[in-house]
Length: 259
Image 1 (cartoon, rainbow, N blue to C red):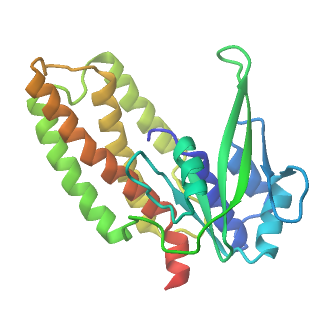
Image 2: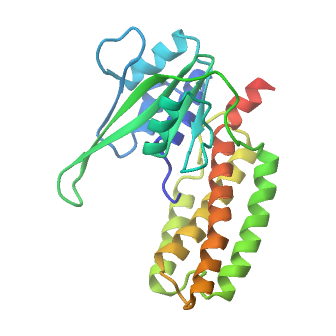
């Protein structure tokens, strides 16, 4: 959760474009990020993959008024509404975008080539039909904020007791990298999002940092099977809570429009 999901960038900047708050060029530049190129395959009315600019314009013409993020995991179809074919593809990618206003969804497929340090990345978004229904298990921003605060407090207590909360040079470097990235891009979502959504996303990313450090640092001081089990038990719910909050933040634009 330390890196922004591609589906999150597409949802956030696609929403800003649909609202007329950014230009197509600026939206596409933000969505593509450091990747080489993004294309959309399976778009209604197109027989071949098309670029993002054309795809976003076509989605608007098809009635799309907003984009939602989905971050599913095994046993947790977070943000999805079906059908099973779309859910399965989204689960494999661990992310997806669901359109609001048209029964369509987008799942990224990433292609990488080249040596380490000079990797060429291309992304193909597969446009597929979805079921028009409420997304699964997405909380409101207020609920997400409260859940995050509680999960962060509980997890910190347990992980500190087990000596796996993250320490040493590797953890310190990760924390510094996170802080630098946060300061470098204070506009974490895109124009048009409420300040509370930005606040929830920042907290969700801090929760994700804690979880990542705890996993990356091995078992820490948890040497017995019971202690290792306690560590996993502490991380699992906070990781789930962080993902739910992240989806709530990205989906805040559509939720505001619906209200």
